[in-house]
Image (cartoon, rainbow, N blue to C red):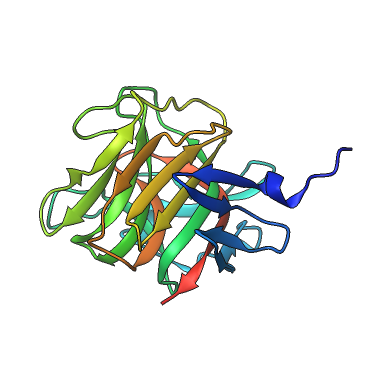
Length: 228
C-alpha cells in the first residue's frame, strides 16, 4: 500500500492550509493547530452529550455498520423566528475556529428541498448559523444561513445549484475561521467547497446537527477546534 505523506492529508482552501486528521492528530487553519475536542460514533448508545430541541425526535439506531444518531421524526418545537426545528447540539463544547467532519445520510423522500443541516456559532435559539444542504438551491435552500433575531437569511458567497441526496452515506466537512470570517462546506471528495460565506457576527458558539424539516442519520462525528 502506498504510504500517505503528511502533505497529502491537507487541502488548500482560499489560501489557508486546512489539515484534516493530520499526522499528529491535529487540524490546522492558517497554521493554527487544533486538537479533537469532541468525537462520537454512538457505539455506546448514549445521547448524554447532546441537547435537542425535542429529545423524542432523536434516538440511536442500527446502520452504517454499527450504531448511528437518528433524527427519526419531526421535532415538537416552534422557534421564535423562522429557522430549522430539528436541532441537536453538542452540549458542553463551545468553539471559535473549528473543523467539523462527519458522515450524513438522508432518510426522507426525494424532493427539491430534501435537506440535512449543520449548526454552529450557536448562541441561543434566535442567534446562530446553519448550513442547509439540499437537492436544489433557492432563497431558502442549499445555502449558509444566519439567524440573528429575525427569520433566517442566506449569507452564501458561492454555492452550487444543488447537492444531491440519495440512499448513500456522504462525508461532509465544515470549516470555520473566525478571524477571516470564512465558512466553507465540503461534500464527499470534491476538491472545491459546495458553498462558502464570509461573516463575523458570531465568533464562538455550540455546534450541532439536524434538519430543517426532514429526517436523517449521523455518524463518525469529529470536531477539532479550540474550546471557549
